[in-house]
Length: 316
Image 1 (cartoon, rainbow, N blue to C red):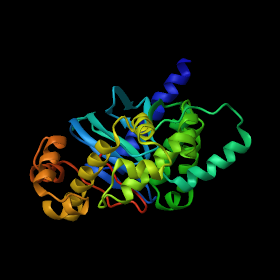
Image 2: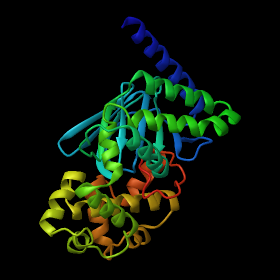
Image 3: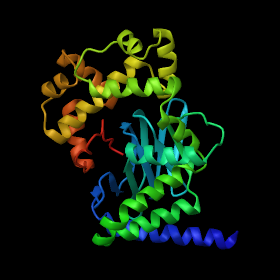
């Protein structure tokens, strides 16, 4: 037991050293692999509203806490975070210049996940688990070793290009077969009521500039309005209209920060007809006016370019 703990601590030290070299810049650092980014934060972050795109966050140094509904999700050197559907929640981090937060972010590759799911279904006949849109789960030694090997490969361009994809696949396998992998597999299979809500979420993200109402979304999901409300809140911890509003405001913030859109243009792009209503609801969510929040984001974060096919890239 003691030898196992020593080996895990040594693995973590190696991951921190590698990440420190691979992610020298604060904010996101791109890698040779699409969908894999390295994050460095030299400062603590107080509670901030974020919208997480489906993906996996593995923290090697520092600590993050996410608040979703009445639950707190801790992800640190001992826990990773898996997100199956886009979810809005509040996040805070522990970090400093002396001990920066160092993490890996994997934008969820649905094609790779689907391929692994098919293979696992052929060989794993365990009872289906309850699908979860988001969960924090313990890092185990096998997953830590897989992450270490990926970081080692990322240091060498040739290794990254040739070995990297197989190592990412190995990490997906470790997570899909880990302690809560069954819940992620059930969520990604998108069956039953969870699957219907997942499809509704994709429709919302792909049609933010259009008029959307609960009746129409419920009808598309082939559900009654009360049933849609109930299942939607079970998956997202919020109501359909609150989710739509939050998603629109997060996307508008990203358009202003990344694309330099004006407040009026960003508001129009995400479906707001009233600029004053947009500014009022924006300040209610983020605690600042749009211009003040954009200035803060540009000073505090280095946003990566968008990932092809992503509905939203969160500011982790």
